[in-house]
Length: 433
Image 1 (tube, rainbow, N blue to C red):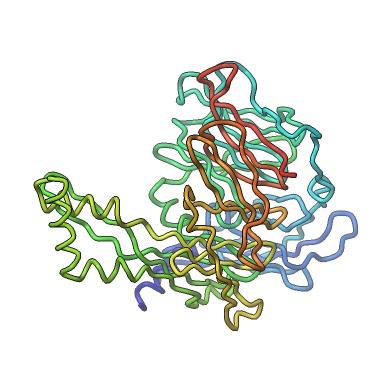
Image 2 (cartoon, rainbow, N blue to C red; image 1 turned 45 degrees about the vertical axis):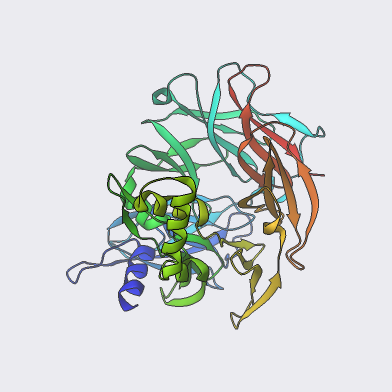
């Protein structure tokens, strides 16, 4: 356990500290651009890292850094995200101004139509997209992903910026702090997006990125929430090694300032854990072999692991400042108390319904949660009342086999094949009424 906690600390700091390393300090004060008043609760983070802190009641902050110069990111709800290059070597106090994001504070549905196609050009495919303060960042391509474009659209769908993707694009990813990244085949690039321009920060090795960023699942004002799945086993089935599914997940909190780690919650599928150790499991495999004639215990073990057992799905989300764990193993919605003194457990049953896709979608603006279902190519979202655990409204997506479904500001976005320019992949959004 001590080793695991130490590993988590390394992940969150983004640095592998050695005794001979020199740490520099970045000191600063954040104020509002117009009033010049100090801003409390601004998130300060070293670029391409999860290491950071928040400003205090006087707007001041102190951050350790191993480099003499660094780029820090400042973010707070209602204000424009800002990137600043600072000098840590001279230990001077940097005064940084942040401006109000008027567009974010006054954002409304800009289209009265229920359905709106965002990309309509023939042969202009959408590979992936993310949503940032009402704007849309997407990867488009024609026939070759090596010549893909990264495009920034306004809320009114005007093209604000367009840049070439530096390598073959794979996907876009939003980390637990709301920062967006371009994932390539070898490297990742954090995306810097101001009001009208797209820029890519210096690349990071893909393996390093996965170790630093992926474990962090969500965050609140004080803590990062890290998830660690466990229970997978490597099987030798004769011709190729096979990794079984994970049957448990442990969540830890890491304080942004002190880096103190605490156990938060653990979810485990006891049925899988026990079955793998019991003789009855092997007897079931033998019975299945006789029934289906697979002819090999190894292949039947593989069949059992891929068909009978499913990867644990108990995601954690921050919905409007409240942390929830959707524990589908034990059929409860776990709501943490604001003072971290315990949990409220709310029964759920929506995941037992036919055609459930084992996916929860959340709206970062409204704080609503949705469960996803699909049958014969038709997908539908059912809103979850997080106070009761019951589903309420149902929304059907009127296009077959949609993918990359997201909800933002009471609108559902999805990629689907065009009916007009088949087989072009289009991005479409629909107002949830």
